[in-house]
Length: 285
Image (cartoon, rainbow, N blue to C red; front, top):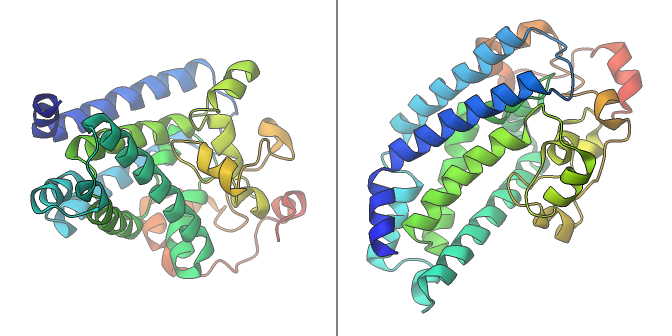
């Protein structure tokens, strides 16, 4: 396992980039072939902004962080930092524990982003997308990306997961975000069984509802178990997947499709009057 780990970690950038491009292309093709919901605004403008954020976030992260999660895992391993470096377990047990604990940490982080007002101002840009497709899984403010990585680095130091566990987790997390934000149809029976082991698009779409009590549910990005165990799981949206309104009551104006307005969004007040029809139909508050 050590030899495999070394090869994978040595090719981290290629693996992550390759998996990202392949999964994004497959999801775009699937959405084109079998979309669950029609677009409500220009897909070209949304995709231009959402994919543009990938470039901005990647550059920001590289400039702000000299070392990322896999590199910190290497340092933690060398210096014996973290709980998993203090206990003796077979490599595969350490890998599984590291992966599970990292996933739980991201669940906790997501809940905190919703509950702490100043953090919600950053995170709400992700929720302000008025349509829901695979690029929504890429729509995060660069300040949130930096804070998220700082949190992840602290978790890696505290837990001491292997470099392989961190690398696989990062690849799976990115792929899962593209998948569970997909505007795709799954047969109800397939979705019912699949969401026992992974967050599905129908499960996560509930989280993007304009209704606040639905927004504050289904926080998992990858594994669905934390929501079920901690009481934040909601099976279906009240108005169904085709009848639900995606996004937030505020920031529905088409100007917010532009990337510069998205970057400004955390610093804007959201008190301007929302679309009245959305407010009446959404039961917000």
